Amino acid sequence: QVQLQESGPGLVKPSQTLSLTCTVSGGSISSGDYYWSWIRQPPGKGLEWIGYVYYNGNSYFNPSLRSRVTMSVDTSQNQFSLKLSSVTAADTAVYYCAREEIMRNWFDPWGQGTLVTVSS
Amino acid sequence: QSVLTQPPSVSGAPGQRVTISCTGSSSNIGAGYNLHWYQQLPGTAPKLLIYGYSNRPSGVPDRFSGSKSGTSASLAITGLQAEDEADYYCQSFDSTLRVFGGGTKLTVL
Image 1 (cartoon, rainbow over the protein chains, first blue to last red):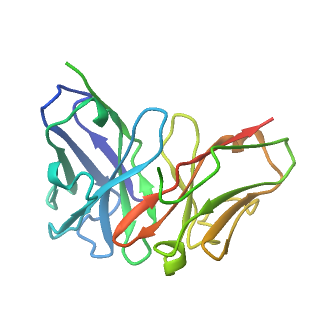
Image 2: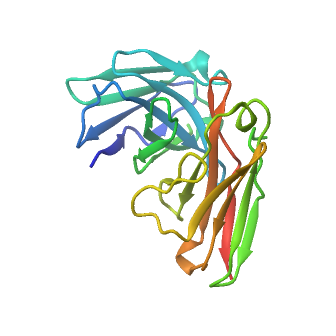
């Protein structure tokens, strides 16, 4: 059973870069059948898809965040990562990593989520 | 404002049936893309509840069902239980984007 776990700092200063890692266990990130996605949820609000990275490094991002987002994959560690630059308070959210099945476009499973607060 | 529109809240008494709607458009549901539903219990991550409009992953009770009509979809929950109190989100594909509904809070009275 595949499990995902987010990790990274819970507090980031405004204008700095948010960095998170998702560790995949119980399955290989190198499977060509899946995209590896990041989704966020501001406190008390709905879900926003940030983007995905494929095992070969190809990626695609939500246009609303594209200029600030970088994603990468480390197949040797079975991990993928998110970097979001020039953060503001509006980027405060619970960040989830999730697996998306290609051609079916549903997200399953999800990590437990990690709260990142942007504050000085 | 979400591309997929859901009612902010619904409620029902234990044992009752409730439905949650998800209204899309010709660029998502109407374009033939699949629609999925997630359940988010308080303080937890969303969990896949229904995929492809009406399919239940293993372990999801058959009290949960989904359907499609035109550019809308619906989630029905029968035999409502206290443990069903949660936020429910629909999700689809719009052009090249993955999009979510704004979420519906289900209150079990």
